[in-house]
Structure formats: structure tokens, C-alpha cells
Length: 183
Length: 183
Image 1 (cartoon, one colour):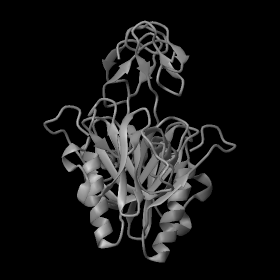
Image 2 (cartoon, chains in turn purple, red; image 1 turned 60 degrees about the vertical axis):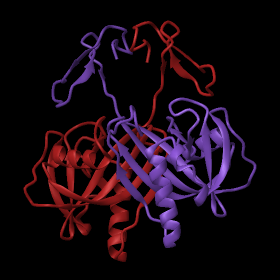
Image 3 (cartoon, chains in turn yellow, brown; image 1 turned 180 degrees about the horizontal axis):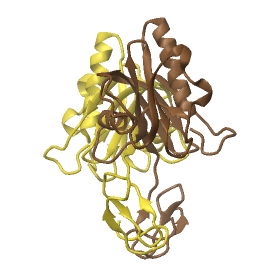
Image 4 (spheres, helix red, strand yellow; image 1 turned 30 degrees about the vertical axis):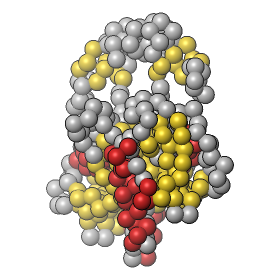
């Protein structure tokens, strides 16, 4: 951030009075520009013993596989966001069955919230952000071609819980590793 | 938003190519300014049969009672944010015991995430954003002077679960009601 989005004058980066963290501050109109983490919502669409995965048609991680997920928008609930992303990426309709995995990724200022979901029918197809959409059994999951660590963990949690016969909420903090902008 | 935070030129509000929602777009430097919901994290600090409440020293809802909670910052995890807010508002140290309540508030573009917590000692005091901090038994909770609906619901869920002898994750969507900017 270089300019104030309210008045167009240059901003400075300093600790505002009464605060304890540096912020982008406009000394002309006195607006303080707070910056906060974003929420990524998604789901695990399940059909019989298979889960739906999407092959990414966009960067980052073009060509790798993911669960349908994306940034939550203003004016929607977390569940609406998760269902919207599933429809946008896979034209798939789901019924959500509760929050299943919750990740904090402080190095990229993101929180991932993934729901367990029941795929309602087989009328799915790649959305504009997907190259392909397909159902995978556990033994066929392309573990080495998954796009994000959050997706790998979520699938591991899912198959482990399915084996155990009970599904719990899983929470995990993920920190930076060797790959840039990793999540 | 009126000006581009990257180049300082006026922005327009239109649907970018390949998108389906209007965004603030800079036609000079081509930056698209996405706006997304913010996360409020907090906790229920429990000591024996009492919970810790804070009397707000700031607007909105000056003078009303709340659980310690506030906006999650960049570069922290959800649990770190919940513990930081508890320390800032009540100089209280807690051990978190899992996510307890999760609210979507689409009319104010917020998600509330409240953890169950164990207060570690009685060395608490009002932080700069609190007029008073005190422990309340269920029968003494100032139900008519609570600051936000999220707090009322969370306390209802807590005492109900405590009565039942088991604590579950509670999720709820809250929509606009008669009060301005209600959460």
C-alpha cells in the first residue's frame, strides 16, 4: 500500500497512537488502513467411497489437484462461500455436513475452513478455474500432485476418520516451508 | 474506496474481465482491489463455575459486557489471536481448549471464532479497551447488558453444554436485525 484509498495522498507506515503495531496511516485524512487475514472456504465433496478433486487451470499451482475452495467474499456466510466455490470450480452441488478442518497459515495471512460435504449428483464438470474434475478413491488420490499442504492434510484427516468410523474437527497451524507462498 | 492504494489514481467499481462480481478496479495500473470478510477471535475464560467478562471502554457498545475478542491480525494463528485479545482486554492468561463457537455475520462481513479456555490464574485487570473485568456465575451474567449477539449466543451455548456435560462446536449464521452494525 502506497496511497490512501480514501483521499489519494501517500501513506506512511507507523504505529498509530494507542495502538501497538505499525499500520498504513494517512496523515492527510487520518484514515488508518488495517490489513487482516483472509478466509479460504472449501469442501470435501463425497460420493460413495470417492472424493471430488479439481485440476487447477490457474496459478498458483497450475495443473495440480485440489479440493474446491477459494476466498470467502463479503456478504456471504462461510457455508455459502464453500458451496459457491464448489459450484464455480466443479459446477457441483453439495450438502454440507459440518466444519471438518481449520488451518491457520500465518506466513500467508490466511485461514482455511474446509467442510465435509455430500455430492448431490454426478452432474459436475470443470468450471473456468479447472482443467478437469474427477472422483477419486483413496488408493487413486494423486498425493504427489496435490496443490496445497492444506489439501493433503484434509484428505489425510478424511480417510483416517473414515477408517475410524467417526469424523472430528481437525485444527492445524501451518508455517512457511521451502516453497514460496505455500499453503 | 475512492483511490488506488498502489498508484493513487481514482478507482472505478465494475466487474473485472473473467470475474462475476463488481470490484474496485484501477484502470491506470490495473490493480483489482478485493475486499473480504474479517475474522474476530475470542475466548470464554473459565475459572471454576465462573466466566470472565469485560466491560467495554470503546465504541461500539461502550459500557456493555463482552467476552475478550477482537480482530485477528496478519502474521498470527487463530489461537494466538484469541490469546492476544484476552491479554490485551483483561491482562489474562488462558489455555485454549478448542474452538467452541463459529458465527458468520454476512451483513457486517465478519466471522467470529470463539474458543473455550481455562483461565490460568486470577491475576487479571482491565486492559486499555476495558472499563472493568470480572468473573460471573451463570446466574449473575448481565444478559441485558451484553455487547453483541455473538456473545449472548456463545454464553448460552456454553452454559447449556456445561449442564449437558459435553462441549460441542456450535455454528450459527446471524443476519442484520434492528440495531445498526449488529454483531
